[in-house]
View (cartoon, rainbow, N blue to C red):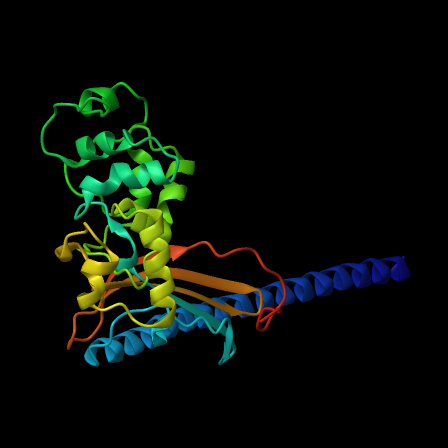
Length: 293
């Protein structure tokens, strides 16, 4: 009986030891992940800070924005500290501002094979009255839809907010996203704008081809605007924007963090973060700098 009791006690002690070892291993894994998450957050913030420095220096030098500007370079993921960080910057002046240039939105929608009448729905979402336009919708329409948000009667705060507007299905919002902004840019930079935005401004395809060929060789300055962009008012064109979106991804071990930060960079002043949107990074396994870069 004493032998049986000893065997039972040994079995219990073994089970307890295994359980404690498992708990200890789990705690260590959680602690490592918590530390990696803090480090990845720090990497993301350092990426935004580094981009702000480059943008401030470019603005202070008074240099035009082009696709070859220092901030426009994409070196890919770079090792830093315990992990890696990747920074990509886009000027918002390459896009059409939904509020500053609302009148050309129907043309952009048509260029993107979307319904130009969606512009009516957006105008009703942002205006102060409750009178619907021909293809729009006001509060009464939204009240009749369970779970629908009511019109803001003010400017949209993010491009993603368009998904709440009548007619703007998620695929339409994603189709628009690369070509529109809500940052408050009153003019478009022909040195960085894509073909779709240039078409929305009213340029003919042949004129766009000439412009793209010219900007491949040198910077288009204000003196060339009239010749290369006939019919586009000069106040709607610029060689440098005021806002930039910084896309940063940071990783430590299997932990990843990502953010899209909008910076205001007036000439001669420090960059200021005006919007900060955490982003769900693509799933990835393994540590270190991603392969293929």
